[in-house]
Image (cartoon, rainbow, N blue to C red; front, side, top):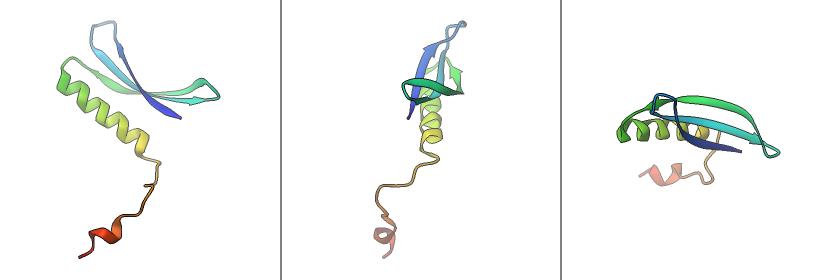
Length: 68
């Protein structure tokens, strides 16, 4: 299971990490970055969600609906 972690850094910025848990313990952490502004934090959160979604396949194949 993966989740996004936000935290305050020593310099006062907000850091974003992707953490992976197995059997209730964090087994891997990927540092996405740190930012000061809300826009920067939102960008990092989208990037973190992209990292989590990389290995996933969609629940439904909607490609037939795109054809017209």
